[in-house]
Amino acid sequence: MCSKAFSNEYSKTTDSFIFSFNNKKDIKNHILSRVKDEKYAINNSLYDGPSFGRGDLTIYGDLLNPEYSFSNCSNYCINKSYEKQIREAEVDFAVEEYEVFQIYIG
Image (tube, rainbow, N blue to C red):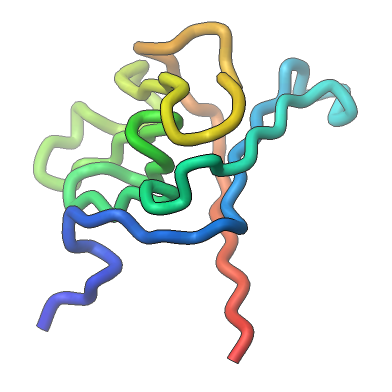
């Protein structure tokens, strides 16, 4: 049975945020953006890697098409569901590395 976490649906939360460093040597120089449209906080796409909002940060990681990986300049970041644009370049950028955390209180 497939998990709902990968169902081409959105997950709703008010606690999600995305951020980007302008300079990886200066972590104080960053852009932080909190979710404003919580019903589109997390995009549980079957075909993408970690994705947030309705395009606010989409990182490709398509197992069926390896040419679409997070490092090949096909990612995009267009402000729609979060407070701020976190990158100057909206489309066709590479991701050097990324981390995703989930906090579960149960």
